[in-house]
Length: 265
Image (cartoon, rainbow, N blue to C red; front, side, top):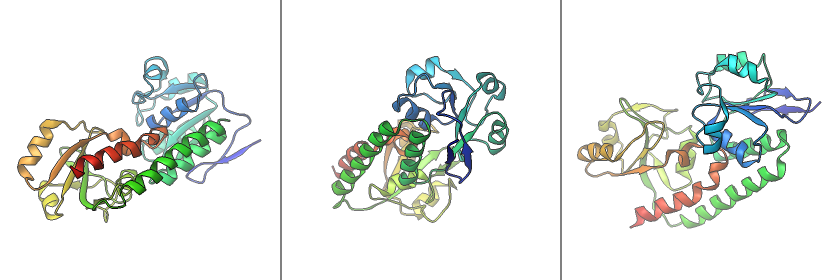
């Protein structure tokens, strides 16, 4: 019976390649689709918006932090895929009584690549997962070459409003930022600290990135902040590109190259 280790170093015994999979993580749901596991995936969350056909047609088992255990029980999964940060520990512990739960823990792009490889192994889609990994690694290698002469910019990445919250130095978003030459002014802090406009001024923030998710920043928020931060360049950015750590990483380097080109103008 195959024994697998997840990213929390927990061991799972799976008698066979899973045929009834539930995903509790949007970016990993998209990965399962790109691995060709259409019939195998039987349940997703209400936040699993990619691909659209799955979002419209797959059974929804609640939110990432509001899992409906009765629905999961009725689906009789043989594998549940979760994430340490996005899902609630107590809910995961309850789900472990129903089926094996594989948990990812992702703070860097290398962690994401290891996750993609592991899920490919578990689901019998090794070739597809290695193709995805190759495209991700190739893209980031090319990005590194592109930004060799790019001057580092003192940057903050806002994820929330009321209160303002930013991505700090131990997050996946920070690792993506660091691949572009964006110098995270909150690198010394942890997770997603609350901040103020005054702190952004004190940090001499040159570039402020407003994410499209989880808070849906818009042009009106740029206008509000620009009036308070006249010397800071402020841009809206695609939050999925910066924070989704599944197969969407294939498209991250190209997006970042476009963003850098815009800043060079």
